[in-house]
Image (tube, helix red, strand yellow):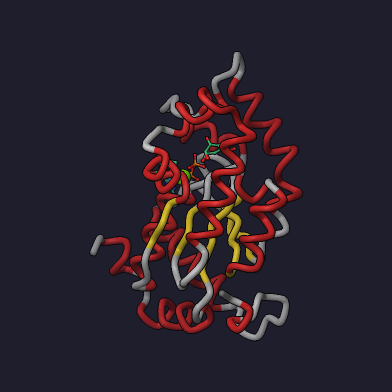
Length: 202
Ligand SMILES: Nc1ncnc2c1ncn2[C@@H]1O[C@H](COP(=O)(O)OP(=O)(O)OP(=O)(O)O)[C@@H](O)[C@H]1O
Ligand SMILES: O=C(O)C1=C[C@@H](O)[C@@H](O)[C@H](O)C1
Ligand SMILES: [Mg+2]
């Protein structure tokens, strides 16, 4: 176990785990929000499996996301993403970190909404940019002005991410602080009637 995983208060992890039941916890949000990094640590704290949908797509296709975009285009990538996520959401509980565009696709968003509790890691442009500009593996940001592209995506997507069950601000604080904020937000959901019931899950 990592330091971050062990540092979450056990009572908080237990409460969040109880709220989750058989439901998945599904991270959504823009590139660089921390879905993969924080999702992995949250799964460790909850002692449930972690899956990253981008990594799973790369595994099943034996191609990188960039190669998939280049060979088949975004539309085909989204169709594959929907199928993979639908499969991964069966048989929870799991923590599932999605790719940045997954919740924007109507079909995938529907799967996520019925598959568990969705959590939006919301970050401002400076935070996202500082994190994503260090690497160039994100095909949507291979533009003349990637910072502007990221800002345009924020404008288009933030109203849709806002449909998630929970929103947690992703700031430049230590990852274990983020993990605790996520666990607290989930723990506080007890009694919310809008969430998909465990009985509805496949
Ligand atoms: N709270 C944090 N503090 C500092 N760095 C962070 C924090 N959260 C994430 N990071 C770092 O930011 C980078 C991007 O995070 P991550 O890959 O988890 O984003 P993502 O939301 O999964 O993006 P994508 O949609 O592209 O998969 C990583 O290097 C990660 O370690
Ligand atoms: O924001 C997006 O649309 C994407 C984010 C990444 O996680 C990958 O899923 C892919 O690069 C597309
Ligand atoms: Mg990721």
